[in-house]
Length: 124
Image (cartoon, helix red, strand yellow):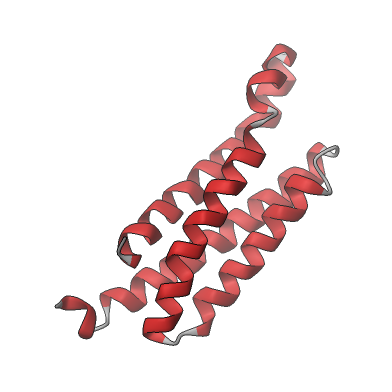
């Protein structure tokens, strides 16, 4: 899979993660029964994020040798993992870590796509 495609998927997942993390507290405040529907989405999203990040950032770094997307992605994955595993009991901390991690992932994929767009070797 081309890195531009996986970066687009990664950006989409990052936006979905932000929407999910921002909407969940509202949904939970309005409808406590929704906990079952939204409470188990983080591990599934994290697995999708990890797979997409690996498929995007590793080939992107190998080709473009830019460390910024790689470091932003590593920071984002770290924050998302911490939010999902260590702080899942605290709605405030889980949301803060997850939204921050998703924002870093969005920036990382943006930088990776920008490098791909400006690469003359990638046009072939």
